[in-house]
Every structure is written in C-alpha cells, then in structure tokens.
Length: 268
Figure 1 (tube, one colour):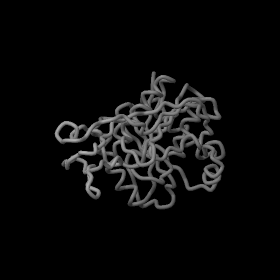
Figure 2 (cartoon, one colour):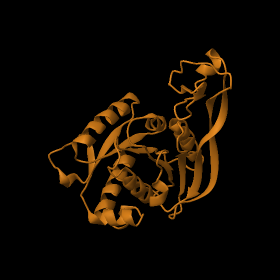
Figure 3 (tube, rainbow, N blue to C red):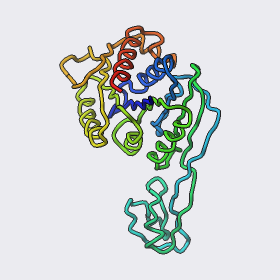
Figure 4 (spheres, helix red, strand yellow):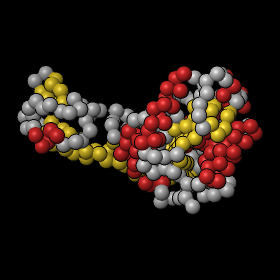
C-alpha cells in the first residue's frame, strides 16, 4: 500500500514545513518514506531534516532568444521587449511556448538549466528529494513534476512539502497525491487561503483534512474537517531554531502527528 501525502497551506508561515518534517520523521518509524520538497522557489525541508545531498540533476527548459535582426513580436506572456534599437527576450517572463519562433522573425528556442533536483539522505536515515529553481527563472511547475517523479524511484510513500499558495508548483504536486493535509492557522488570511486550496483539492478530487496550528490563539475562527489541533508552544519555536522536527522536543506536537498518521492510514 502506497501513501502519497501532500502538506499544503495556501499561504506562507502557517507551519507547513515544520509539520511536514515531523510527519516524515514519525512515519519513517513505521514504514519506508521519502521526504519531498516541492517548494522549489524556497526549499527548506532539508534544513529541518539535516539532509546531505549526494547527487544533483540539472533541469533544462526551453527559453526563447532574439537574434540581432529580431523584429517586434506580440509574446503571449509579454516576455519580448524593445530596449533601445533592439528587441530582447526577458527570460524571467518567457515560458518557452515557441510562439515567437513559429510566428515572428528572428527568434529561436534553446534549452537552458533553470534549476535542479537534488537527492540525499536525512540525519534520520530516510531519503529526501528536493527541487531547486534557479533565481530569476520560471518553470517551477516543471521542476516540481520532475522532483516528485524522481522521488518515486526511492520509495512508495511520499511526504510532499508543497509551496505556499495555489500556483503552478502546487498544481503540479496535486497530480501525484492520495490525500492533502492543509496546515492552517486561526487567522482571516489563512481562512481565505483555505477557501482557494479547498477548491483546488475538489477540482482534482483529492480528499483533504485540516491540521490547525496555534489553534488557541483565536478560538473564534473555525475550519471544517479538523483532524488535529496544535497549541502554541515555545518548544516548537526552540525546535525550529535548532533545525530539528518539533516532534522530537514537544510530546504534544508528537501526539498530534501520530494521531494524524493513524487517521490517514486507517482511511487509506
């Protein structure tokens, strides 16, 4: 039985990666797991798990380039601009769609390294696969796709730490998961983000549950399908500052993670 779990949040700063690290650690004690960092713009799961990367594979994506005689072109993504007397391609906006090469004069596509996928092992012994997007490049969704496919070579049970929001990297991760855990906090901003994430999960027909972090800071804000509540704790802050999963220091946090695991396994 394989179990691919996506941990998402809809916004940054809710404790998503903190929970992902503990979930991967505790689950690794009862089954083989692979930790996957799909937050390719700002990957940091490897920091919490003390990972050492042993191999790196470049990810190449097609980008457009302008020749000396290039003329103006109505790029669908607004990547082609005139600077002085020349038409140039803004690589940060180019999606490599090939429109300019096909319909305009003076443009061509070339593959360039936009990021890489790194494979390593955590301090706890289980493998980790992380995607990294090079600064200033687009194509995060493609790198997430390659990261998760790479991780599948190392095990059947993936704990995937998603990017914040509902953009391309999150959508790419949804294709491979059995269940989604939304790590939320009792704030209006988190509630708005949850509504967007909920629609995304329903679109992909992926079952979802909520883990409410720091629930006791504002008991008036409620969420549906809450399977676990994490109280605000300075032990968690200490664990994060020491770059270790909080389930190692905080027994209440560990109990929440274990209850989450029991529910996910029993409902699989």
